[in-house]
Length: 158
Image (cartoon, rainbow, N blue to C red; front, side):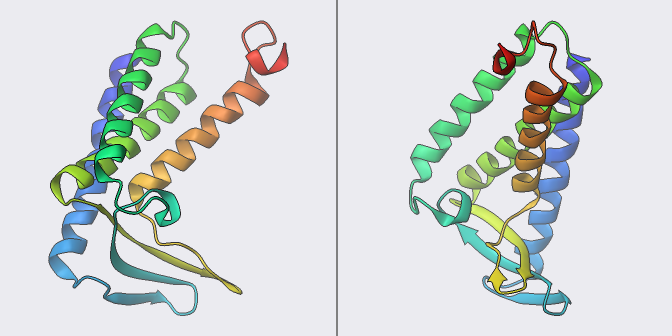
């Protein structure tokens, strides 16, 4: 099961990097393509900060933070003796998302973002596939820990 985590991670990283490759090579920076009017655009931007562009310009800090997070996650994966299928998917999503954005920071100097949603009365911050992987994977992990965890194994229910 642990091998599957890394196989899925590689697949998700590949998807992330292929999408970003096409964005970089087919669009100009800040160019926007309407996909669903007044709801979803593909907009090419570079983000040198974290989520929602906080801590702009912290490239080295975020590279170090990502490397530490990857090492801790891999260590946790190897220490986890009861990995289920949902654990496998959630770990691979988080690992791939962190790695995908780390690759951007190292290669491009900033993260490539392109998904731009408009929710009524709110222009949602632009994000990418790797960000989606991190968020979905973390929600899955939280769900596993809080909702599905056994009372003896779940630290939140003690």
